[in-house]
Length: 69
Image (cartoon, rainbow, N blue to C red; front, side, top):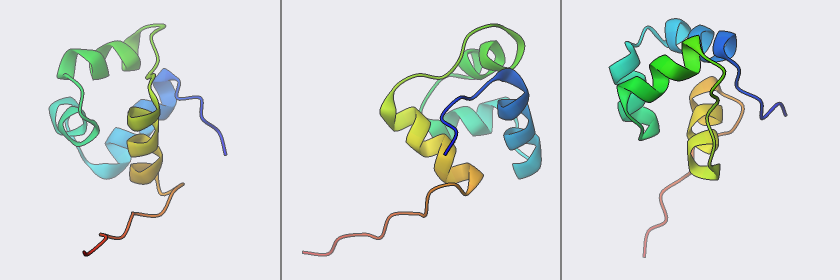
């Protein structure tokens, strides 16, 4: 599993899902400027939760099932 999200991979994921930068940001839990920076600059997403959400959106990880008490 590739955990490296470069600018082209982020753009391809967002466009493939038909999302705006703001919509992707909302789904991942970051700001729209962060997405813009990831797509245009040397910056890349960091943090386990952000990477996990990106991998789930990409289909690399299955969605979690809700745990019912």
